[in-house]
Amino acid sequence: EAGVAQSPRYKIIEKRQSVAFWCNPISGHATLYWYQQILGQGPKLLIQFQNNGVVDDSQLPKDRFSAERLKGVDSTLKIQPAKLEDSAVYLCASSLTSGRPFYEQYFGPGTRLTVT
Amino acid sequence: DQQVKQNSPSLSVQEGRISILNCDYTNSMFDYFLWYKKYPAEGPTFLISISSIKDKNEDGRFTVFLNKSAKHLSLHIVPSQPGDSAVYFCAASFSGNTPLVFGKGTRLSVIA
Image 1: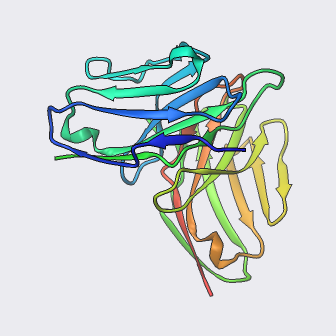
Image 2: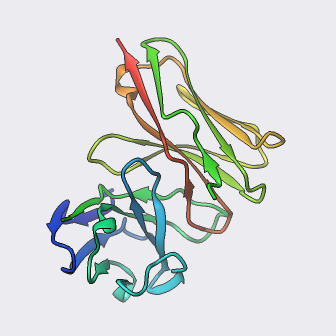
């Protein structure tokens, strides 16, 4: 079974530029998460989707971050304009949704963003 | 306000001995607790989980213990192997496919 795919793996941009990250979850996983991991910290949720609907985006800086999950499969996370403090690893995770009270989340390799 | 805390940034253990990684949490409403392992340049890999209604879960060399009254959980690795060297994250969740709340991680080094 293929894991969660993310691209690009690395990205360097200047502040005020825009950037987009792509995620393809494990086949059949209805729930998709984007996390931000700043160096030395644990991952923190940015947004959660179930199918193509947003479940939780309370921690997404909506003035500069946006995300979508068209057709309930792939997802794109965008930052526009980027700030220096956006330098982090952006992790995508997915999980099953129905049938049990809890499902483990499986993570992709992440995209390391450096904003200069 | 950090709801999940891993107070030891690093731990060094000899090969073959037991590794014990600790985690504390503040929110008594958490239903599930998980441990993830992370190698450099890779995403976190799920290791083991435990429901709040249990106090122990075992999977091969890995055992997680949960003490609800103390709001404390620990991961035991026996015996430790050099390949276990990684950063270990403790995470907590509510039931129903909710986001994970992570600690800051503990870097485990297993010395041959």
